[in-house]
Structures are given as C-alpha cells and as structure tokens.
Length: 167
Ligand code: ATP
Ligand code: MG
Image (cartoon, rainbow, N blue to C red; front, side, top):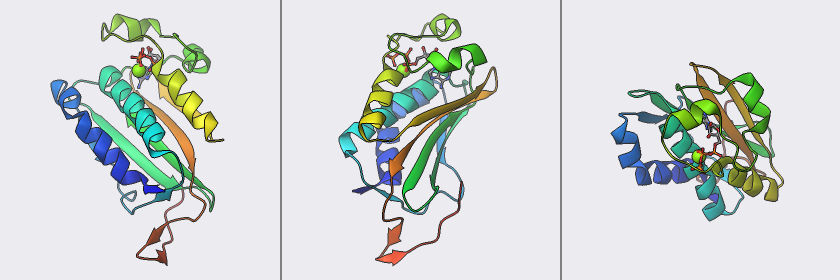
C-alpha cells in the first residue's frame, strides 16, 4: 500500500521537463491533499500515471493546467482523475481511445508522436486490478481521464480514520 498523492507527485517530478517545455502547470485539486492510501501494485500504477500525465502534457494547452483529483468515493474505492484544458476528444472517438493503436485525427495532427498504446496499457493494468477507467471530454475544452483503485481501509493519517470529501 502507498499514498497515491505521493506517487502522483513523484511522477510529475519525473515529467518536469515535458511539462516545462509547454509551460503547463500541475496541481492537486483543492480538497484532495489529504493522504489517501491505496492497495495496488505501485510500479504498475506509476506506469498508468505516467501515461495519463504524458497525454495531458501532449494534448493539453500550451500554458495550460493539469489537475489531479483524488477522492474516496466509498469505503472501498479511491477515484483518481487527471484533467487537462487541451484539445479534447470528440464524442465519436471516446468509446475507442482505450483500444490499441487508436489515435484521434486531432491527436495525430498534433505531431507529438506516439503509437496509441498508452491508454490500452493503462486499461490493461487497471482491469488487472479489478478496477475500471473512464473518460470525459469536450472538444477544445479539455479531457478528464481517470481510474479507480482499491482503497479498502479508507484514509488513515497517524492511525486515525479521516473523513474525506466525497466525489
Ligand atoms: P502513446 O501513448 O503510445 O505514446 P498516444 O498518446 O497517441 O501514443 P494513447 O495514450 O493510447 O496513445 O492515447 C490514444 C489517443 O487518445 C491519442 O492519440 C489522442 O488522440 C487521444 N488522447 C489521449 N489522451 C488525450 C488527452 N488528454 N486529450 C486529448 N486527446 C487525448
Ligand atoms: Mg499516450
């Protein structure tokens, strides 16, 4: 088990150069700072976060913002979402973006490189954890891609159960 916010921060640090290249700022959403412990394969979840934050950096808006939201949705689940304010994904593409090699025309025309495997890998990893991924997006407004994790024991800070904001 590990604290998901700590892993998010580690991943963002490892992507500092990519974010700085496009002057994109990263933050953890207000109210989501309290440490949340999750039960998962940390290195696999690191890979998921790298893929999602890399996408947000590639398809996000220059000088834009990436925000991570982390919530205990119930006693058993933690919801992690990465939001950007970039090019967005048209509704007709949404059902397919988790397919291997699937890239939207807009995504390709950004000329940022990529093979279309990142999200397929994320989905594979999250489903192997018996959890699920989801996406919400609006063209030219932005994209939120997220996943759930096992948060069985809820949040404990210094051994004390902490009541957290619901999503
Ligand atoms: P790779 O991750 O293999 O380098 P990729 O980023 O193109 O390549 P995925 O991460 O699987 O592949 O994403 C699939 C497609 O979904 C992208 O090509 C892009 O069209 C779209 N997409 C993914 N994330 C976003 C996002 N945050 N904003 C807009 N479009 C996105
Ligand atoms: Mg990608």
